[in-house]
Image (cartoon, rainbow, N blue to C red; front, side, top):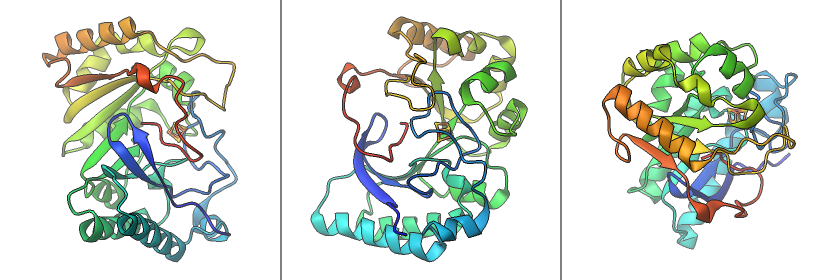
Length: 276
Ligand code: SF4
């Protein structure tokens, strides 16, 4: 079974032209969250372990061959790209040979696109030292934190056996710089109010983030097509000002709002996508 491992480049609000690396099967979402706004459907509880990846054409050999061919293809073609990015339709760190693939992709980048960053979007659940070390081998690492408390976390990210405290502790224990990604949702499944609390601010004070990105969900969702997650721009600005005031940091430099009318209604490309 052949899988689409390298895709794009797709337009990313943070990264520009981003060549995606997808480490999960095209038709099965492998993630320990089920974010209500996720565009790639519902996580498979049945899909687990190395054997399932191998059976789905995603053994380590398949992936290394896929990324090598994909990156080389774009180098030969002279494709313009701004980043090689671990994203796709699931949580990349759940791939059993994630550490090996990171090394491989960094080697390919060095060979074919030496001045471009390798980036990753992760949902902040990875705990083992090896995986965390591999994440920090990349140049830009975006860690998700979509809630200010447990209740909001459950409503927004719909975790599968993961507690909010684990996410917070993971982020607090990171000892190198990272970029924090906060999806802001409103309406019936709002997480907005949860950010305005002292405990959340205290947690942020203890984290070594270099920047916070606040962004709205501006893409169609498949998990819950009836839900409307969109925020309004003023609410994002109010939250950004609040964070800047409480943390004594600066808007546009330390807290960046991702809001661009040009991305509205835009066809973001074929499956898989990256939530960026
Ligand atoms: S948005 Fe990302 S973290 Fe959330 S369920 Fe989808 S793949 Fe997982």
